[in-house]
Length: 142
View 1: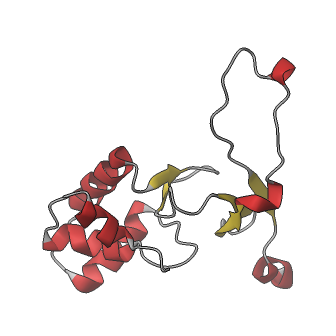
View 2 (view 1 turned 120 degrees about the vertical axis):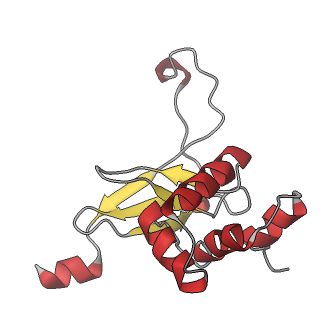
View 3 (view 1 turned 90 degrees about the horizontal axis):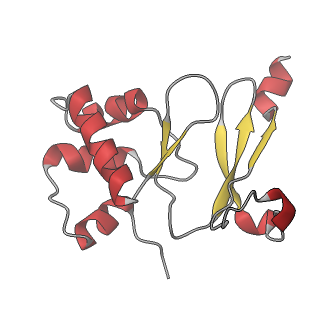
């Protein structure tokens, strides 16, 4: 069974899909996609040259509010947007040199538990793990 695309998920929720919104959703398709708003804007303009950066930000904010994409921020600089939410539990692998960001199957650290003594009274309902290191391209360039 294949996973539905972001655009298909948005349509299923009854989201009004304008040509500009479609261009933004399509820009976020692919594996290991973690784009900044500027990168989404560049990709969307390849399909719809009239798409404004304001439309991109508004659309991204709507999709984040709907829970269809996640805003991720791991380093100084702009947020990135991750369309891989809700259907494939995952963590992230971040290159500390170039900022490349990849999804990592959550099963890799499935038994990660926070001891009750370290929860400070919180009820824990989600875990996010970020593995940091250096990607092969940056290692080769060093």
